[in-house]
Image 1 (cartoon, one colour):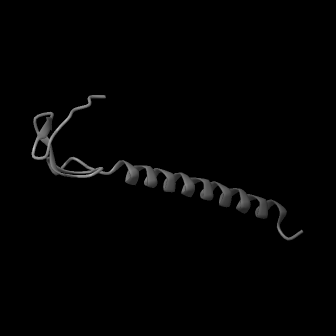
Image 2 (image 1 turned 60 degrees about the vertical axis):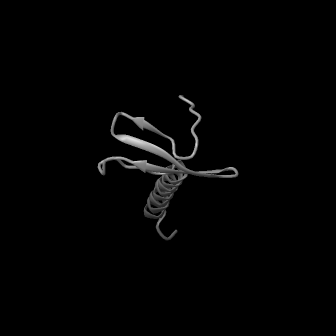
Image 3 (image 1 turned 180 degrees about the vertical axis):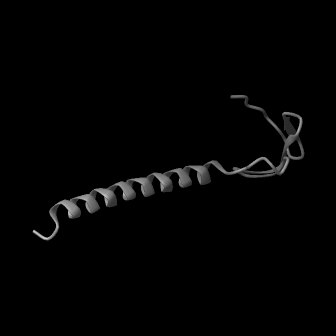
Length: 78
């Protein structure tokens, strides 16, 4: 991991076509702007993690529903 110090108004460039600009610093919060080609997806890490967790929950629920469906088919109305 590369760690850089930047001040407000300074930026870094990635791969010659993505620029990350420090727009403001307010206490513990740093606001950044990102200039990148439209074909690049830019997402916050917590959004990606939430989507992954939601997908994992959906898979688990689907597997549980399938097990229940199979049990009901095997046991019917005993």
